[in-house]
Image (cartoon, rainbow, N blue to C red; front, side):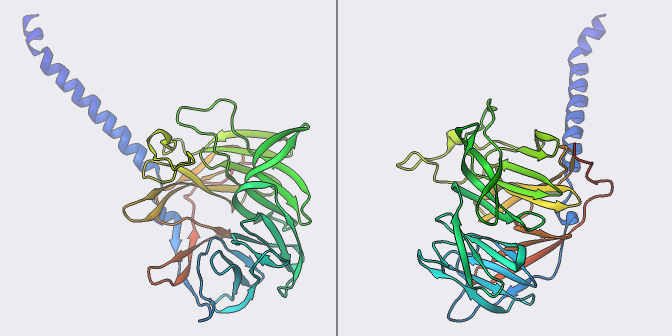
Length: 357
């Protein structure tokens, strides 16, 4: 018995060592569960977008495939530049102003039925243009803060992500994604702040919306909670819990209006929500690397039933559009040139979406 007592500290050390090794093993296993982003996003040859000398690209904030061309809103030049598949400028639409066909900070574009192009600007005006770029009409979206702007899968409706004002059973309500027809009539809305917030969560409703196969999805910018609407009703679930960290609001500097004025390495946001094809969606849960001055995004692929298909390691790009099996991202280089980066999406074997409930 005495011998056992004398060896007890040594035994504890051995046990602690085993437990520590087990914990480290769990950590390594958790790390290995993240799929390397370079195996999911296979880099293809980028396309150099070449504007004219008199109308250079300023601030690009979105893109849309318009027929065989690429529409790129320019928030500084106050227009939308149209490039062909080789990156050559073929047309410029709009100008700065408040009149028909004019913009104040265009930020998003979407190709809709009949070959028309819809563009949203900083005044939340949605302007429609004919296939030849001629102004048709405009209407105003009911959002305060805008998130994303895209067409539905069948191109007959427009999704505006943001902080939307709607009526719910006759009472004012805020939603993260609004679904309009092409004439500006609100047809549906989705995504709201949960009744009970987890520690560190915040009522920041600016958000994102996406739709495919009749399924409407929405996410709040400061949450990893997904809201899904199918023909069978609404559901919510969390994605990316293994990597998600709520924004650290209590450690951020405030400006004179009491708003957070700095994005730090500790903040994590939902920065994209896109249909990924085959019934799947993909969300970008990201931080901003203030040292490298680059976004770092984990991509979570999931199906409408809440099954995570894969979660990637952090990538230094924020995809802006997915077309068929290819993801696209506009990157501005230090010399001011803008390149359309392309990535072939290849999910791991067995990562197929399940039928929606």
